[in-house]
Image (cartoon, rainbow, N blue to C red; front, side):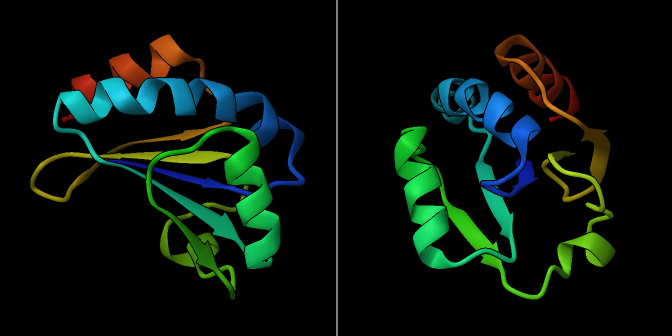
Length: 109
């Protein structure tokens, strides 16, 4: 599983989102789930962001920014790579490109 924590106002998140949106279908074909978590924005803001980048995986809103404490996502974007047993194998802070999403997700699965 790949968990991506972001906000729509974050320049690095906007830089990264096209790559993740592009990588997500290939990861899904490999049986790797992709989930997005927005930190503390309105549903309207998140919906606009998701539509702008043609996101087709689940995106949740962390209304109270608990991902900062629970997932260590103090800097965004933060991407967590979780293996099939639920163990976090890698936490990456900062934007990734398509190849990195694919390689890291597959290597940590």
